[in-house]
Length: 243
Length: 243
Image 1 (cartoon, each protein chain N blue to C red):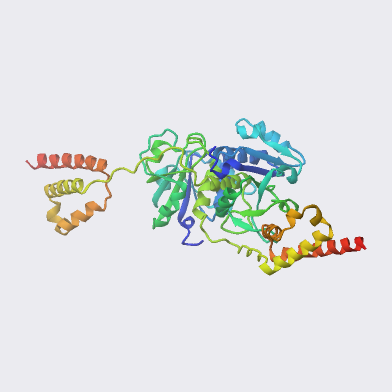
Image 2 (cartoon, rainbow over the protein chains, first blue to last red):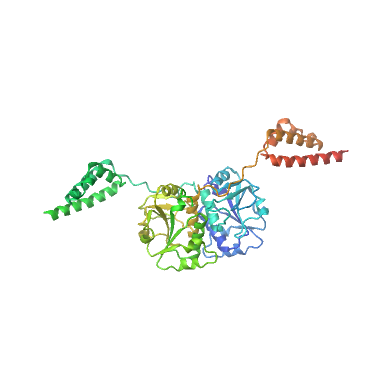
């Protein structure tokens, strides 16, 4: 893990999650974004155990820790975020829109916990009282809840968003040079003339018209070669036919 | 919907999705981020029908359109993105990391489609050939696939990320004024003296030491009042006890 990434000092804390599928989905999102520290808080641990026994369980589930209270789960953390859909709740904490969270996480020299509440009720006021800040994902309407696994994925994506790409993306294809385009344009005009297009639509065959038309194509150098091969073939066929 | 948001001109296209739970999860994420246009491509539509009949089906499922080919599904779109985990695939398209997609979507005056492939295989080369650009979510390791519902949620989050918040977040609490802090500090020193702390730890009771100590608390104005009430009570009790 890259120590510069906030994800390397993150713990995801699922509080009273009830659906093993959601626990598994959260763990999978953690794997995707390189977060390894999963903590599950609840009176009973059936959802965690059920998620662990799923066929495609993420390795992060194997090392997940179980706690009976939020206080125990976050004891070693120096920044604790509680996620919330806001709604009409009275807010006693500073609230960060998700995009503003990474800078706080980066500035925290210790471990950061992000708490996600149960599917039905979110985090209780008592659970929120352990948090330093609240975190909210901006949505189309306020107060609606997100699927737990999706909320975890979106939060971890944001924290991983500025990481360098794992694979070098391809260089953009080289654009055609002006010279390429001139040759293409000449060939196009020659072909259109051979097809007697110039007699029917002379207004489209002004020098400026075809020049601009060709420039608007945004051709790559390689594709220009392909198109010119096609035009040459068409021109040859037109001349054959005209003999 | 805000016409300035890319989400208002977006279509989500699920190609050969097999798990109704994933179709439902994608629809829920669309609802959360204000995207209404769901299109499902597949030879058989059982997953869509099953998702539609789920108890908490998102309204977006009711209006979802079914198509038998990618070409038909995207016929009215002027920008078509294909999502991919990259991996070792040969890339014939320009590739955007997700964070770079919103500007392309905003610049597209028409409708933008984002294609998501099947859970197992992603998008085929034939399906990708209908795309103008590829879209990839940066992950901890390249080439691993994301859960379909989570991938939809993350993509739509990025496109909704810069939307204004639906609810005004609370103003940060007013910080204590220098005058507040002076009065707090005086009361603190008086209390510590009454407790004979100054005799045991005189080095902590220099004028600079307590001034800086108090300033490091980052107190709000309201909390300063609370703390001063506590100190006054403690001071009163210390003086009672000392009589």
